[in-house]
Image (cartoon, rainbow over all chains, first blue to last red; front, side):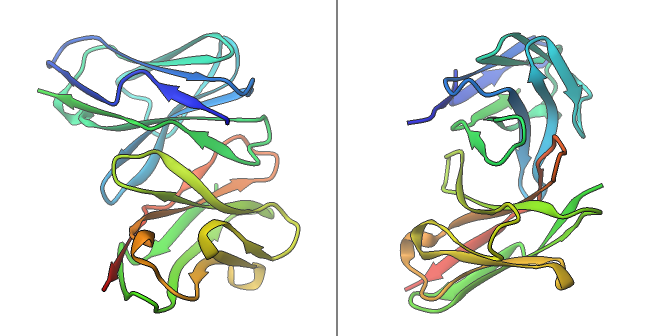
Length: 112
Length: 113
């Protein structure tokens, strides 16, 4: 079975903390994505990576950064967490042409 | 740029009734189109996809969708709703050769007994 694994299902962090969300895929996919999901807004792309050490900004990159040092791992970093970053975060991976994207279970982050 | 519009943030049907979830897209070139389902506190699972082969696409759990280029639509249907179909459904589009998957706002399907 193909798998995208996010390191945490639930996280509670304090305002101003540096937060790391980790995602690992076992399908040797070139592309990896981080989305944020909020009610009524669907999924919005934060960042994506099409190769190791390569990244591109999505639609809402402000307040976030990413790291992809190995092909299977894509990390999302909140440099200084704020309450408006409370959300569900979804990681996905795909082959280069994105004929299908595979999603992790999501991380529900609460910033207090 | 591609975009996706899902008409109706909430749809309610009776068990056994037809399910119709609407999706319209905009894309300057023929796209790939997807429907995903999300059950509570889960990630997204692919229901079906259109990648420029047959315009009527059959997916899992009895769902199907038809690509209509003239109407720029990709509506999702199921002849008879089941209680287990209650979930949130997302339509998504990708431009062929592009590198982004753009999602609609989602439609929550409620199935009444």
